[in-house]
Image 1 (tube, rainbow, N blue to C red):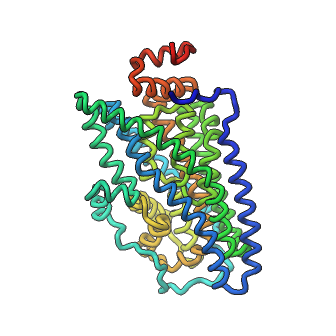
Image 2 (image 1 turned 60 degrees about the horizontal axis):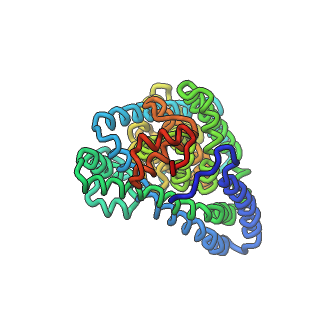
Image 3 (image 1 turned 30 degrees about the horizontal axis):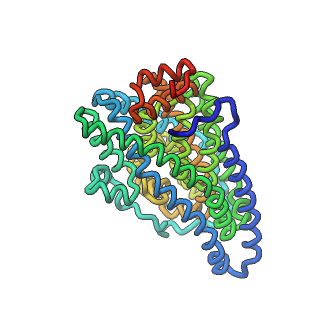
Length: 457
């Protein structure tokens, strides 16, 4: 029998994780700066930073270890419970519609604030030669390769490489097929896969205990190699981008308010930990398991989380979107190559299309920008201007991606009437547990929870 859930009025224990992450963030800055000052050369600083990077790499490997089975189990369990391809199409259509709207607004805000704040004017650092190479691989950034990449050649290969989009495609087919089969063997298989979800969430809890070490390593690594001086040199650019991100947060929360009402503020409070984790590690992927947990506690049905959230991680990267247009105009201003409003809007449309194939690509945002710059007469070498501070910028992008996908999932759940309060989320979770154990019909379990009865009753 699983342990009783914590009382809803109590302060969740996971708040201690936030405290430890903040401590790790501060200690990482202090230790990294001390190592930067102590190191006698750039080579020595990089050697020291390598040991810090090891902590982050180990943590990210543990995260990647659980993401693939977690996505597969939650998505298949959710689709099998729906059992209706039309419902999947309807939910997917609503989700993609929201993603496209959010992406367009993010790209537009990037253009708006780059024009208003002029971060590239009088940049104050030597400009790279226009013929220099950025070193980023942009050859595979085309529709043909993206469409081929969507469909996995081998499901095991997709799981091994953590290809979220490919796992999602296979899981959709598998979940729909499982939902249509009603024989005893299929029901046992569906219950087994659904039973995998709480196991993976418990593994997630174990992994998250190492998050402060991952945060410490990530921050100490970058400060050891770059120092704090680079923040002063690029301070104006980073401040301008931070202002643009805050504006995007306000717009996203405002859009969420139109659907969720005041509950959107409760949602934002609920996902502070995942956002902080994404910010500290500069990886929205690191926060994925924690986002799932917080959304379920907020009241979103597990079946909707399992479908919409991984879809969002492939197609709804709001922080990355605003960054692409902002950086493109920054480079335009730095090299004094003006772009007309028509050219800027065309760039927005090109970025909106090309950015949908970047899930899983290293330095995805920079790769997209590097591919698009030559189309508008801008030097790809301009990317070199910001390579040194991209990690710091990625911290803000990752936190924004977490916020955007959290709001998107909750909004779709509201539209699908799959969003309740914490009490309803608890009832939904207990209903699934009881039904899976075969102790009582799902409806009886839900009724018992709704009336405050014990599970033994």
